[in-house]
Length: 206
Image (tube, rainbow, N blue to C red; front, side, top):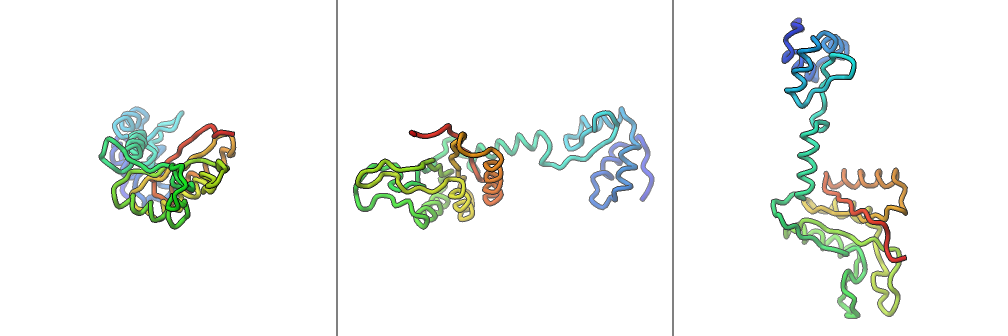
């Protein structure tokens, strides 16, 4: 490898970002730059950072830059659609859905029906599906919403069955340990490749 001049910061930066660079060489380059030049270059280059107390030029992963986080948040808010008005389906994880009725053809809320509905919504350009967090039904003849799916695992299954649809999980904050919840959310988001959404609520009814 050819020597790199201390004041040639762009060359140092390019070398540091090279995937073929071994650890020993990378360490030597990081400690060889001039503090002023390194700081100036880091200001011009969003993908670089300076470790506090040193003049080391450290490459950041693209997903770690501030602009990339802003871009990612904007894309999530858009839900993969340029439509300013987002349309979604609410309550499909519950028996009877949102219709309080005794008609025989009322929504079953079964898993095959949920998957079929999600695929139809995905193909039709519907942006999202939002479930209801329930722990028991209303009783009576039909026991309205008496059968429901837990929402995060429900979302993970639908995300695996669709391509564009954003699927939310509805979580009652007082009932689930934050560490477990975070693990579940990240897992669902990996399955959906960034299409998982979170509906955080305080509780329901009783």
